[in-house]
Length: 107
Picture 1 (spheres, rainbow, N blue to C red):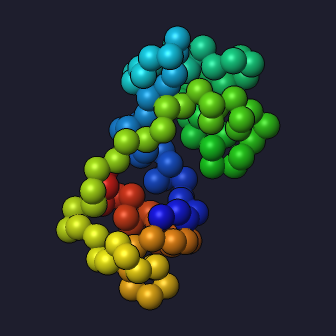
Picture 2: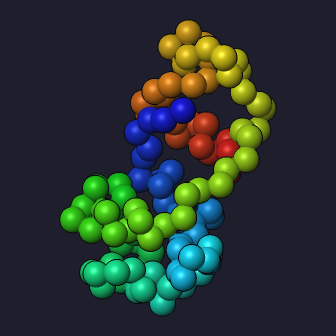
């Protein structure tokens, strides 16, 4: 499933489930010193990462390659119907702005 997350959803994901790749290791984002290691040196803090991802800014590619993919669990309450698209009452497909609700259930 995919969609267009809000700024608050991106912020929650980064702060709660955010990890970075340093020397092929998965390291949690605990401080701004870790974020300062992003190649290019134009991102200084965690809020800069959130801003770059939300706005697809000029350093989006570097930030996106530096962040480890999010590992989310199943949503609380379960899935509706995994075999059907969202437009027909299922789960997979484009949820547009409704992705915020399912991501919140997954955190």
